[in-house]
Length: 234
Image 1 (cartoon, one colour):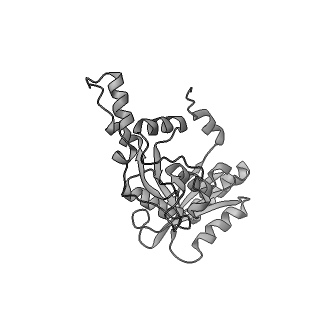
Image 2 (cartoon, rainbow, N blue to C red):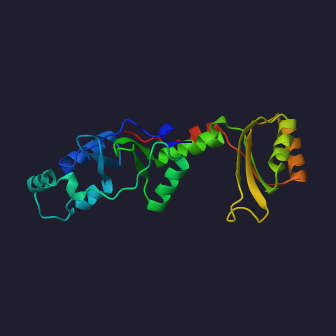
Image 3 (cartoon, rainbow, N blue to C red):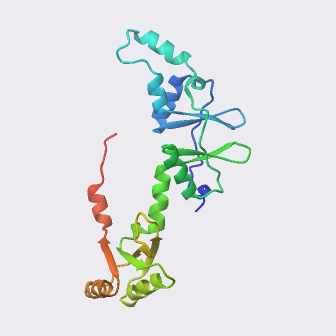
């Protein structure tokens, strides 16, 4: 999946000669944690985050009065505190590559630029989560079976065929043979499927456990998500 399919295109931006007070107001109004800094052509010049703003603001223990504080914050410019050395991603690069860049740079979002270095979007950790949910098909509910299968051609199909034979419709198949998660010569495979009738499901679980190494089975409920939703009064 490419970044261009998941990035946010309507991005709030700011110019480098704007005060940090104005930047703070924009972040609060838009409920965002960072602002890309662009020039008059839209070229990406840097980025300013809420952490940058906090670090630049005087301590609560300051002896400055409110007028002096306001003057200080209005006189300091975004260019004085913005980060200029940036990690970025291109629209035709994969979401997985964007996730690596975020992880390696310990950041929660990436500006998306074209070949002229013009900002065209932003992709965040939340967007990455959406991709994961889309790939796994978890919003369809159903049940996920985790297997430790032999790392050979056909092993995944064998498990999937058993599931289908009991009325389970395959929603997604994920696989890894990484040394950190799977034994040598095996791969961990995660198959999500629709839930067969209860009687068939009991028989299916028994057959799968007899024929394969089943690491676990997990059945999610979207109703449970609603029960655990945290509602914050605005």
